[in-house]
Image (cartoon, rainbow over all chains, first blue to last red; front, side, top):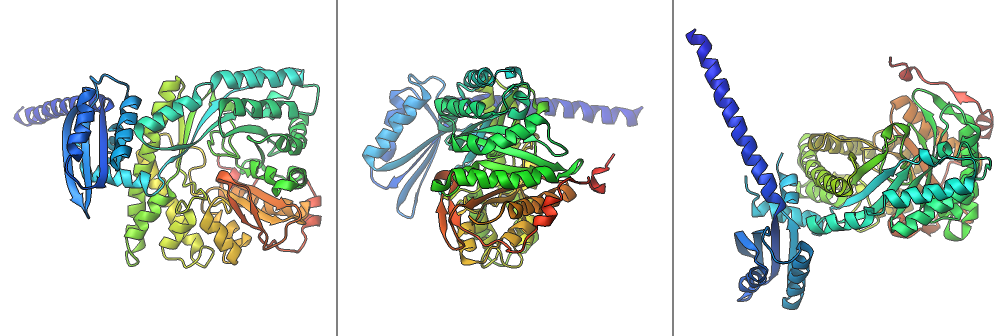
Length: 122
Length: 454
């Protein structure tokens, strides 16, 4: 009897673990639909981050994560942004950011996060 | 697990520096229900059905491309082979249907519409033959219509009467479009073992078992793979090189899978297949030949080319098959000459010959593709080229094809430019000795033992 009870317990634990993993992955997939990645590249100068985040704040976009670095004198910033509650459409936000980028000499690339998840996760 | 900024930058590099894109989203439209006796009425019904079914294809594809930040180069429609749709027509001139399909393509803003096609691998029905005879005028009078004819399969053998006829049809199509270098032939492909769910042109059509259509995706990405191979340096052994190609093919395919799913669900149609093909364009760096040269060939066409291509082709399939459960269509590297700038250059230099291309087609997809030959190449010689390719496909149970342009008035060394994705290339020399007696025998090359697989 003792020998039999052990595998049952592991199996039960595994089932809980699998359910948990599925819940995590489902919630990430749902979240990914409302999350976008914004990449900003340009010559380094004061105020770039303030400018871009200003545009985002205006439309009520929520910044989740920012990573910024200087690579060979170029300012590079990657942001993860939640657009669930934004006051304009995705394409309007993208156009606004692109226009801002053009006026400030920056390349700004805006994409849904899902594409990255699809390409980099099995 | 969150996506790291390194992964994000890698993806952005693939798209913005290495030409990663989705080559095509192709929507199938079944036209069986447009059949009738009056060809003008059939043509009208075909037009209306394509317009209705594919109305939202272009805006939807553009929307998805914008949101996910990955370009979709072509939007296309594939239809039921018109030889089936037109079989009940009293008229044997099917060109009105061709014009209406082309009309629909222009109205929808799609790049190509494929399916002016007949499947005659064993024998021709009167409708099959009528369709084939309608091809030259149909292509000359249209600009976006694509046509294909299947003249052989592993199960049926090769219909040599159809092969002989297609040699003449290609010549006629070239002559009718002489002022553009015979450009009609760039929209005409002769197949052995044609696949019924191919999203790539000129050979796309919607087979009888494909239901009411759906959305298929053809991926691209030669530039991305070349960049990876180049970064590996010159000393890494081939097994590890293959592993790296496999990894990047996985990522490319996943991008295609996502785009396909999003487009299909927004259009409210099933997601059909994803074609794991490396499709080049004439754009600098978007070349399959560049990958082969990055693997260590001086010039594509030199000894080692077939082996390098075989390895590349298999590695792409391995990565792709892991990334999607919907692999279909052609699924293999394409080696069109005029559509691949480096391929065209090597052909002009004499490094790449038609005979070497033929050998290469034994290990990849799909055949002698966008090969420009002298205008005085005879119909029998063209038929001989078709028969050779078909034999490779028939024996190896794979799809092979011939899309060859006998450019009127052009000689070896001349250059012909078709523009756009079709690119341009040199007129390549053809073996001058004749196979006319062999071709005129007609009949059928019997199905090989390979076909007896049950």
